[in-house]
Length: 367
Image (tube, rainbow, N blue to C red):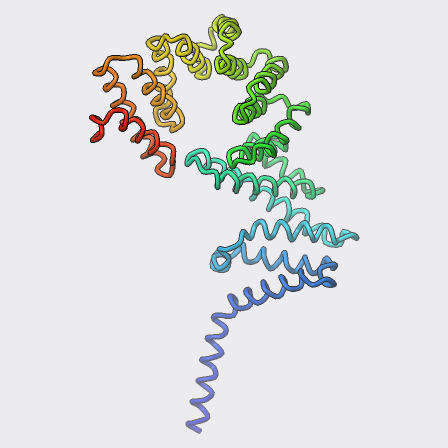
């Protein structure tokens, strides 16, 4: 009797341990089983196969202790692709009440994650984050097309955040540009410009890409068309002025600048203030240019890109000054760049800029 009881207790304890670990084991097993089924030539034709796979992934996403076990894959993208396959194989639309609402939810999730990746790309100057953001937004739009009767759920969520189909497409283009996929980005911007969507930023982004490709004439053409579509837009006009300055068309730049100066509201526009600075620097009037650039910088001293641009101007100005005054400006630029580095420690451009300044002014090496 004693031996029998001990054996029974041991068996119960073992069963208890299995039960404690069974949710994880069961999840892992189902994840593998459904993945294999989706790869099977016959099973993959059945909507039920994709339905089961979707529900398994969904249950994992709902449980942090399970989702953390899948760090090597983006389960949201996995679920999106699974739901898209479910819809494509569900010719009788038997599972539409599950697939379309689920796809709408994952579409919103992918949109938010994509935009967050683009923000990371902006803050840290990260091409990798930009590429991730572009891919996530591309997938979200692929999902959006297939959301069917649940599309209004996505639309309402986008509207609450000031977004739309065009904005998501635009931000995908931004991500592609920042990740080096300039040709793909330009195709997206070209399609948006060809549509009835009249948003200044699309013209500005497309012009930037043209400049990156050293196609200044094309950049000017894009901005000229943008100005014709949005004649009262200061940002587009300022960009056109800056492009004229790049190709030494100072007369054209001055003419547009004088038109902007007639509007009192532009005196508070940071883009206009920066453009004034760029114009006077082009003319060689560094003293007057600094006044505009410094006002532009003072408006946001914690914006990394602003710090970098103003610091670069100060270094350019040192070439026009005597040694002592030049070192003062260089010292200021170094302090600004160090602050920018603290704000964005992963930014690789700032250390390079600091190295250039210190090499030019070795006495300031300890600052």
